[in-house]
Length: 150
Image 1 (tube, rainbow, N blue to C red):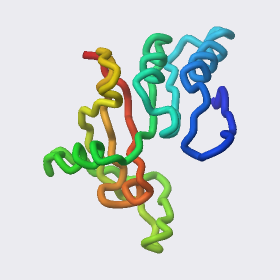
Image 2 (tube, rainbow, N blue to C red):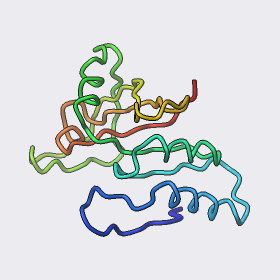
Image 3 (cartoon, rainbow, N blue to C red):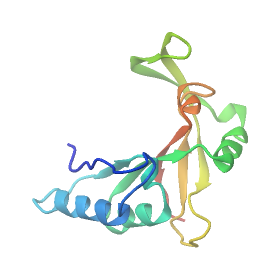
Image 4 (tube, rainbow, N blue to C red):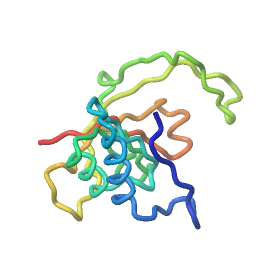
């Protein structure tokens, strides 16, 4: 179920009040009595310690896209070859650049700190880099799979 969406004004990478938006959406979803697993999926404009901490405080999991910056690239490059796991997509994805269908990928999970400027215990999250050297890397995104407390 999609509980909330909001079109953006201005640049595509700008988020307006992401913490309040996420908290309001979680509360709205829980209000009618939803008590099961709740996963907040958000794009890279919502990637930050405050949003992830808000999800955790409201007992929701999060799946947030992270920008493929130098730190993310270095973390992914450091993944041991044996740590990659092959997956098969149930429906193939068209790759415009390669002009082919992609139905296989490799994923790996690593520790990654979202925000070093806010020393909170819930900063570390696990990262899943989609198609190794492929679709997600080309588009400059990497998908966070879930949050983890230490």
